[in-house]
Length: 460
Image 1 (cartoon, rainbow, N blue to C red):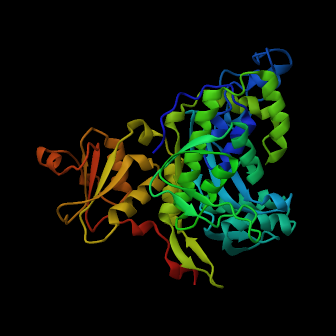
Image 2: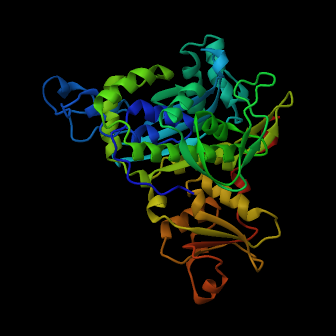
Image 3: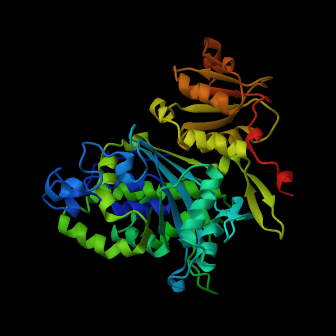
C-alpha cells in the first residue's frame, strides 16, 4: 500500500529523480524536479526575459510538449532502464533488468508509468532493421551495445518497446547499481515498510562471485536500509515473482521520496550544484540540461497523489522458449488493453475506490488472480482485496456502494462484461460485504481474465 506522505513540493534535483526512477518508480523524474530553476540559475527565478527567455519550457506560463521534446500538443514518453551491471564490471554493457515507460501529458498535467517485466518474450530488431527475432526484452540493450547496432543499446531497446506497445518514445534514461546505491547512502539510508511475507535470500550477491554473498533477509515490518540493502530488496527474486519485484521497487522509491522530503537535502543551491556535478555521470540519457527547466515546471503542476503505475505482468503467460528458457508471453489484445489504460486519464485515482473481489467460483485463487490483473490495469494494489465468497455466483456482478461509477464500469469492461452487470448496492448486498469497500465484485465463471493472455501455441 502506498505510504502517506506530504506533498512533494521540495527543491529536488532532476538528476536524482532520474536515478530514483531507474530504481523502480516511474514518476520520480517529474515529482522530484520541482523548482529546478533555483538550482541551475540561482536568484534568477528563470523569469521570461533576457537570455533565459529562449530556454525551452520557461518562456511560457506552462511548458508545452514541444518545449520538452514531445511534439506539439502530444505526450512525452520516456523509457527508463536499470542495468544489471555489477561493481566489478566497470562500464561493460549489461541487461536492463528494470524497464518501464513514463508518460506525461502536458495538457492535463498527468503522468503514468508502465513496468515491463524483464522476461517478456518479444520481437527484437536485427542489426539491419529488416527483420526481428524472439528474445527476452531485457537483452535488447546489451545486444545493441555489444553488437554495435546503429544507436547502440538505447536505440535497440527503444525500438523494441515501441514495437511492443505501439507508442513513440521520446527519450531514454539508463542507470546501474552503483548510481542507485549512492543515492540511498547519500540520504543516510531509508525506512522501508516490508509487508508479509517479507523476503529471504541468504545467497543473494551483487557481484555473483563465488562466496561473495550479501544475505537479503527482511521480515515483515519497518526496516532501515542502506544502499546495498535497498538494492537487494529491490532486485531479489528467490521465491517471488517479477510483479512482486516491481512492487518492492516502488516501496523503496516511496521511502526515498519521504526521506528527501524530510531532509530537504537540496535547499542550499550551492549544495545542489555540487551534488549535480557528483552524480550526473552515473546517468546516461538523451535529455539535455536545457530541457530540465521545462520538465521542472511541468513537475510542479502534477499532483503526486494523481499518479499511477501499471504493469504488463497481469496479462502475461509463462512459456518455455526454444532452448529451455523460462519467459513470459503477451498477445496484442492484452497489451492494447494495458496501453489504453496507461494512456487514459487518471479518473481511477481520482475516485480512489476500494474494491473487494469475492471468488464465487470453484477456481482456487481466482480472486487473487483478478486482483493481480486489475493492479496491472491501474487500480492501486492497496485498494484491492481478494476474499472467498460465502456463496457461489452463476454470473459476475459489480456492486457500487459509493457512486464510484467510472471505476465500476472500467472493471466491467476489463472483465469483458456488459455495462448492465454494474448496479447500485441494495440492503441485501451490504450484508454480503466483507469490508467497507466502495465496490464489490462478485466473481462468477463468466469473468474473462484469460482473454487478455497470450496463446503459447502462437509462437511455436
